[in-house]
Image 1 (cartoon, rainbow, N blue to C red):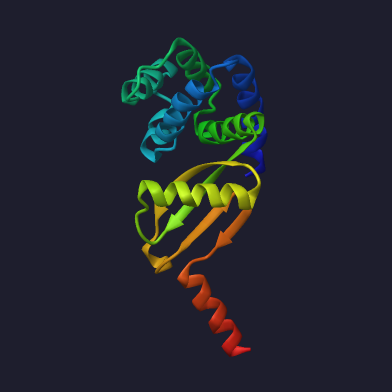
Image 2: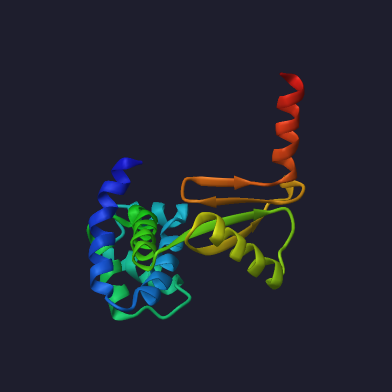
Length: 176
């Protein structure tokens, strides 16, 4: 996927520079547009040669739940007209990376076997921030296959304290 990253980089950097002090607001609408653009049916519709750029823009902006600011509309038009709609999720990912680098934080996905309440999530967040040495933007996803515990993914680092991982370690130790 290096090609997508190469294509997305200039768009993400330009949007980052143009956003100025409203990085949070830009991230919100960019993530929504990326989620819409990732839809396979929309990709097929937009890729149809008989569909104009204006029609694709109208469909996407009509599906968006939030009211898109002018900057978002202009950015979306540019992406569609340049035939880069399929790259929009990668643009959003690179934009988040740039935003996180500026704020000194990282995105983290916490896979948990059970739902975490507010107090448990706050405690886990403090522990993980100390462990990884930076502020983390946590996103929790349920994964019952873990049986218990959590698996945390921060960039390319993984911290797996789940019951499933411990059972796998015991299995390897017993077999060898």
